[in-house]
Image 1 (cartoon, rainbow, N blue to C red):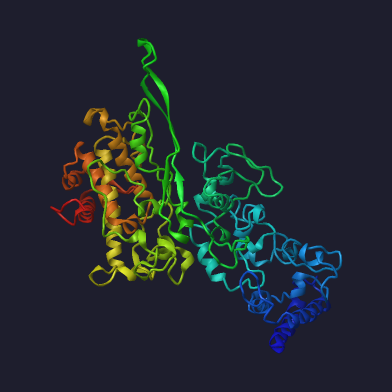
Image 2 (image 1 turned 90 degrees about the vertical axis):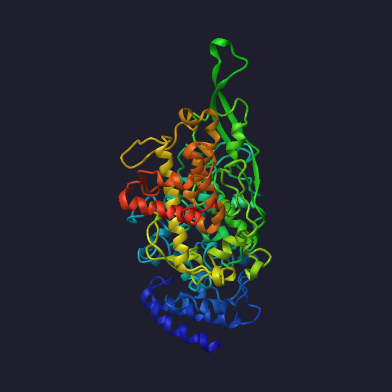
Length: 603
């Protein structure tokens, strides 16, 4: 066993003598570092030399890493140059250098920065992945203002993502993550603002302040889920003053959703790839607005007054989905349809002629769609479905789908698990236009667990659902414009409703139902995969919203309503207008998706 390690040691002693990694560019020092490391390898090549985090032999991990196979970084380069152990406990367990140069924790001793960091212009992390230190230096081109893999909170904490002994095996997973929305340093969910300042110290059940920090930063997410969904405070990195929006933080770094958001072994280590334990999710959906209403305590000359409308302690529990609880806490949206019903019954009643939409979805509220929490459900309509099983995927091994919950089971059961994509597209949808491309293949291995035989999902069938869903949302958007609920403000956008009461059509009592239709449009538009998450529920929400908008009555005239449209716009890319044959195709696809074809019933 010793010989197997000696060969790379001898070969890469020559390499390091030329490259100078950890050696101050002198060959003698490089060779001596490897020679000294041989003693480490010989002594620590036993069954008890096991990583307490990964459970693997530390020597084996180092042997297959790029530190050994490419760069020649040895044990001594990281842990110090002493040949034996220090004579006191503090040398190892406290990182002290009192009895030598050995470091039990090289990160804390900053030895990683002997080869890595902003002062090493040829470092792969700067040349090939400048996102590591983006927004930390003006010398890096095209990364200023972005989020960063190494935010100030991650300085000296490389092990939040990397195995210190085997830095290479997980590189492909890292590349997948980096191309996903979670690792996108330039995307608006990470870079559009300093999200770590968008937090609050107020109680989670009553606050109306910003709580973006809990999902748009790793530190905020860990604080939120580790506290039982109660802590939403702003933060700053070590040495910086904490700032709360609208104050500007002197810490300019921004965080992506890093490895340690989802991976934690209970001791703060992410590189074991053990999943973070998150309890059953509950979310408070609070609302604060104002309403012009009759004040019974005012004089007759001043009956109308602006009344605050606030409701809080509005608690919604999500089903316990095991490890997928990690996903639910951020993909539950910021509001949901039932908030409209609550607001309509609030003291002095919300004035729907002047209020903005309440049930704001925010982005990617897939969990709320899946568990039927988010839509505005019209009174008297049935939204249940006994055949629906997607919410049971990965729960108690339903249909042999395991126990990881629906989110992980569907989005991460592929050869590229950390892309979080259950399907592959011919052209990748973008943040500004999710309608581009077509589904080329199903990559999730979970779909076939349930969808078999005549019920099988193919790429063509799923693309048909996707296209139908998008055209149905387009038709719903068109009804808002046709009925004058939204009025054109620019050449490309129809704007948003300004008067949900819609007095001239259906009377003042129409406000909640009209706002509900817009909420359904807004939340489903934000969930790009709604057609797969909960197809029948989604179709019923769109159907009933169109049904209401057409004439203020739920009388199943949706087909006629869609066919009555004279124009339409793509809701995700409103510069695209539909007319003539394109409009006709859109209408036909929407009708086919919602009711199966002309003359079909409510889904």
